[in-house]
Amino acid sequence: MSQPDLEALARALREVAGGLVRSTPTESLSRAAASTLSWLAREGALRITTLAEHEAVTQPAMTGLVQRLEAGGLVSRTSDARDGRVALIDITPLGRRTLERQNGAQDAVIVDRLARLSPGELDALEAALPALGIVTGSAAPVVASLR
Image 1 (cartoon, rainbow, N blue to C red):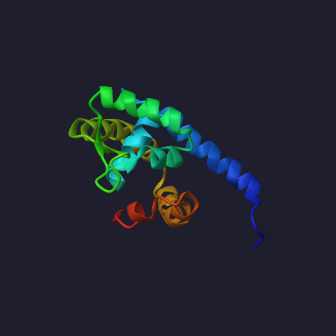
Image 2 (tube, rainbow, N blue to C red):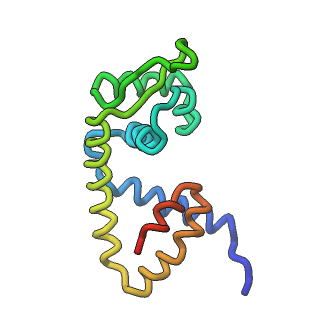
């Protein structure tokens, strides 16, 4: 079997990911806000610089986003016990509920689209998840819990 064109495959995966993101409702959170809250929900309290690195944005941009999230009651700010000059940002219970509500709405759209696939297409998609987890660096824990 010949090797696939990796550049064409990369473009196709980018289009698939972008299509899913664009087609799902955003509720009250921007994509950047939802992604930032997701990091905090998974990792716990983080520095603004760490959040900025995860989101590939500047520190001032992340500071502005954190200020908006904090004003909305979605995150809280505390001093780092190891370095009092550093603020740690954490998701609040309201932030967690808001994120869960948005994720549920997005999941519903995706489930609706998955329901249109044949059993064979669903099996093929499920079989590709471990490889997609490697590509994204994020899906491995999810893949293990599918069945």
